[in-house]
Image (cartoon, rainbow, N blue to C red; front, side, top):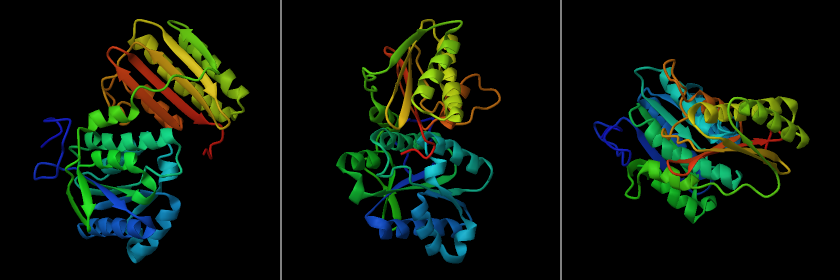
Length: 325
């Protein structure tokens, strides 16, 4: 089955190039055993291998690989995927740089130390990976520690993966569903902004400039470093420009902050049709997608909810400290 046939189930078969499996384990021992087996199988098949895990887990996996560790690209997922939406473009680049070669990857986006909104974004990322790589030569393994996952997150994680690794073998997952519907359900309508904060209604032609100034003042007053203020201003400005260019009405900017973050939200009447917008590098011929791609690159978390009837909401989070949570 090819991605063009259905946005739903993508099981492994002779016509399917993506193998996307969840590894449900308990504790570090189960993680290392499952990841090392996946990596060694790739190395034996002369595949290019990349592993993105938290730093502590990278050390354990690297030690277990022994002299084969130099044949694997090890990436700290806390840096690579601070914003989980950066992980798909990173894997796209890794695949593109190795044409004609199958890629084997490990990606642990979901970790229990992330806040609730980031954990939801990680599960959304896993669901969207089925669309992003449906026709690419990738074997992707996503570890989940069941002792720390929780029942609701476990169900979502299972539903996001067409394969589940059991006793070292990836087998079809009967609970796998439509990845697009799952991704939309995980995000859902975003909760209303808090009462504390400020709102700006903007439109063409000077709206994006007013948005940029409002974000700069709010973020600086919240104690954000100047370089991060500049990044946040650029990101929100790009989204506000989308309102002016691609919709006929006005947009609403909402701003608020907490002890550790500033949040800027843009609402307008537009509709985003591409579920992967901002998650793949736009090509030279693409007329759209640059703004949200840049926003994901600059900011710590970007959540998007869009419907034809309800319009689009883009919620952008930037931590006051680059070290973050």
